[in-house]
Image (cartoon, rainbow, N blue to C red; front, side, top):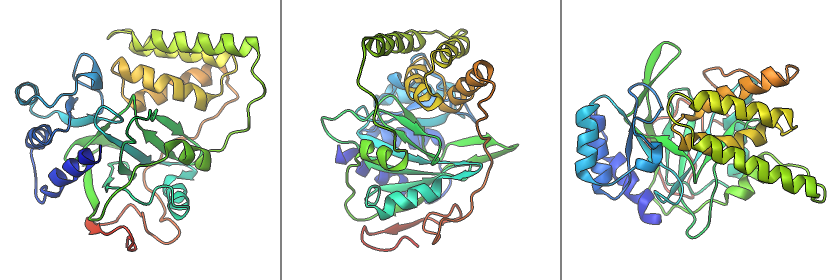
Length: 314
């Protein structure tokens, strides 16, 4: 598992100048990192089964980018690739950098392998996946930090996406030259977004849990042309049954990703369903940019550099 982040960091380190996405895809596949293409300028997979089609086969990788030379580059997260990602985002009025810094000072996210700046002003922090342990993807909307593990995927440099009328690329901002370490994703979630202890389980709770599981399976099986509509319908059912919006996102993100939808599209659809079903809920809107964290360690204007684990990051 450690080798995956090392291999990815090694390839990214070579990107000292402009690289074609196809060249990065070939290098990553040759290093043993499974890859797949997404739409040019976006995050939606171009493959029939989304991130499930990721491969290291050089012939398939060559064929994908010969057919779609401007395609973006993505890798699955979790056990499939051996790497997981903490996604720091910026939503008004929440600044994910502040939450990430709190977690850093608590020793929960300190030993990352490398950091990538995202087009929206956020940041991706990469870690080795924990061997022989499931690490499910989750979203913590209030602190502005998400986790990409099993059931997720991520775009890599030098991919470009269109945001606010401009095309902006992912870029490597910092590579850890010392050893990285696995991440306790459950502990991180409890730290960032603590939840009350649930009451004792009743037979109704067990039935609702089974119904939610069947609903997620149904969403994952939707084909092209019915994915968005099916996701919206499922989210409305969860809202009607009193499932909190963050829990609905947790359940439906992994399921809808399997059907080929991108995370932002999933989030928008689920929130729209909750606004329709529960009009009193008013989720915050996304804005570009972020104030610096308290001491600027993870400010979005950081430059690319390397760092040993025990040294300050700026």
